[in-house]
Image (cartoon, rainbow, N blue to C red; front, top):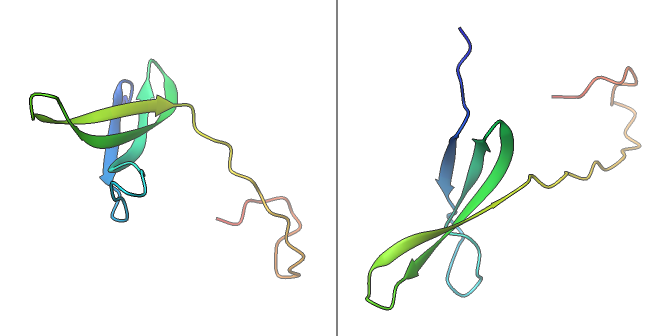
Length: 81
């Protein structure tokens, strides 16, 4: 039986985030209605003084592949991981 990840996700604490560098407090991945998404969360405080997590969802960014002239890489077209 295959596990259904639809409408679920994970968040991990960003150990280097600070209010000064404006990085998200948490980052992760999720699947919404069958579509993979990235999610980021920032700790904020309401005008009433209540702390909350503000979330942003976006489509995953394509990772740039850097060509290598290393002769130890495979030439069969297989991904090396």
